[in-house]
Image (tube, rainbow, N blue to C red; front, top):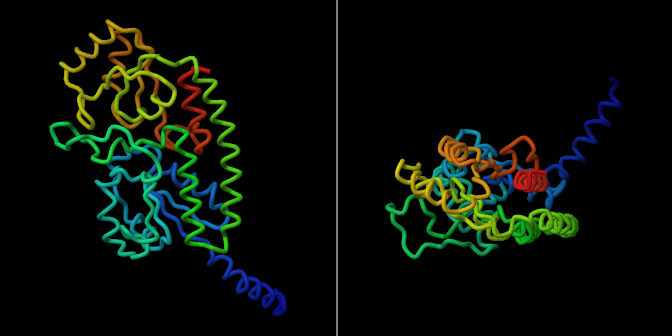
Length: 299
């Protein structure tokens, strides 16, 4: 390579540095949030999700790489409703990045953009691992993805004013595509209205409420508490007395009790993804709900 070509290459690299530097470094706690940020942020953001889609979102095993990512972050977007309370605070303390500390401009709690259900009147360990702010799995109602995307777009515009036009356009594109999918999912799930279901953990309450399915009970004795033999017997009594359509099982809890109930009473057990990457087919936020609907409707 001659000197002139080398100078041209180096000059191009130097000129590109400011463009690279303009990218916002965004860290999210879960993959579904990363998917939303990528849709809205486009080429102006670099996104890293801390948790994996197959992991139990309540109990994430921290890695040193998490601290490094948080230390470099311009924006941290969390699910909130205390879903991360058991694992995120120590990481923030060790990262020591004032940009993304609680209360800073660079810390965003998505749970503040939606209405939470199952807010307890009182909090006690006797009630299991309950969340004081309400059920944190609000994102599994696909309608909630629209206000979440809007909130993310507003935050990106706040932190990166020059990119506002791009963020708003990306948001508009996302909204149009998402609304079309909402109409499709509504039509496909209409036949399940009033169906009785049992779920292992209360992951899918928002989804059930949205589409009119009725929850008969949970396989867990209490949130975060595995079932006892007495509780399983009580569930079996309910299944015998009622026409249960199916048992919903997440992918990270043991499915032994759910399989037992399904086999004994001839009720299908359906494993549903709870996040992007939870199953192979759930590659992004669109395909996650496509797969949830497909599994529920057996299409």
